[in-house]
Amino acid sequence: MALSVVAAHFGGIFGMKFVGGQMAVQAFYIISGFYMSYILNQKYIGAKSSYKLFIGNRFLRLYPVYWTVLLFTVFFCIYVNYKTSGNSFPVFGNYQKVEANLFSFIFLALSNIFIFGQDMVMFLGINSASGQLFFTDNFTNTSPQLFTFLFVPQAWTLELEMLFYLIAPFILRRKPPVIFIIIICSIAIRIWSFNYFNTINDPWTYRFFPFEIAFFLSGYICYRLFLKIRQYSCKPKIAWYFLFGMLLFTILFYHLPSVGLKFLPFSLKELFYFLGIIITIPILFHHLKNRTWDNRLGELSYPVYISHMFVGMVCSFQAEKFFKQSWVIALCTIILSFLLNKFISQPIEKIRQARLASKV
Image (cartoon, rainbow, N blue to C red; front, top):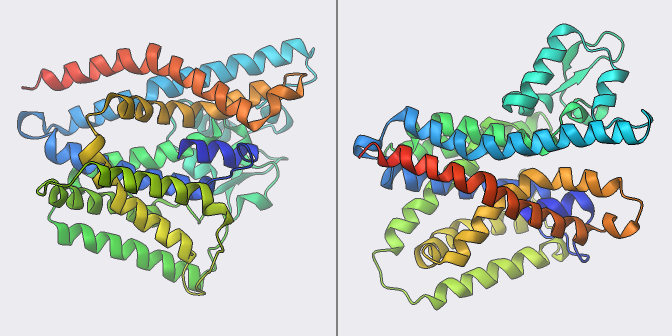
C-alpha cells in the first residue's frame, strides 16, 4: 500500500501505478481500524486499559519518525538554498512569497510540528496579498495552494489517524450494533453529500474525517471476522491464496475497467477492492502474524509512507536523470525506511513495550 502512494506521487514504478494514492490511503484506514480494534480488545485490557497509556503509545509510534523526517527535510531545504546561492529555497520559498500574518504563520508552524491542523490545510487557502487564511471547498483552485507550505505534505493522513486514535477507545469497545450504526451514518452522509453538494473533488474524496470514519470502523468488521476465523482450523495455504489474489488485484487494478454508479462516489472495482481488503486482512493476520519476515515488512510501511516525499525531493535536485526514476526513488525510500526503523522506531518500540509491561 505504501508503494502505491509512492507510485501515485512519482508516476508509477516500472510502469505499475497499483491502486493509486486515494485507494491506498483508504485501505490504510481499514488496516488501522482493524489493528486498533485488535489491540484495544486484546492488549489494552484490565490494568492496561488506560486511555493515557494507549494514546501515549500511539503517539510514540508516529511522532519520532515524523519529526526525524521533518528535520531531514528542513535541513535539506536550507542546504539547497545554500548550494544555489539563494536561487532555490524549497518550501521556505513559499513563506517568502506570501507574507503570512501572525495567525497564519503560527497555524502553519504548529501544523508542521505537531501534525494536527494539516488535514485542515486541505480545506483552506491563503490570500497572497494579506496573508489571511480562508475556507475553500476545492484547494486546487487556490494559489498558492496551502499544502505547499507543509514540509511533509503527505502527513495530513496522520492527523486523521490520530483523530481516530483519540476516539477509538470510546467506540471500538462498544457492542457491534453501535459501531455498525456509525458506519452506516458515515456512508449515508458521504452519499448524500455526493448527490446533493457534488463533493466529487479533492479534498472531499478522502480527507474529510466524518466521511472516512466508515473506513476506520470497517476495520472493526475485519476484527469481528478474525474472531470467527480463529475458531476454525483452516490450512495456512488459504492465507497465501488470498494474499496473492489481493497482490494481483493491486497490480492489475489500474488497468481494470472502471464502472461507476451515478449515485455512489466509488466505482464497482473500488468497492470490490475494499471488500477484498476487509475479507483478506483477518485471514492474513490469523495465519501470518507470527512470521518474522511479515512483521519486518509491516514495520517498514509507515517509514516508507512518511519519508518518500523527502526522498523524492532529494532525488529531484540531483543532476543525473538516473535518480529521478520512480523505481530509484522507491528503492532509496526503502533503504531510508530500513534505517529509520532500525535507529528510531525500534528503540522507541522498546519504550512503548516497557510502558505497557509496567501496567501488569
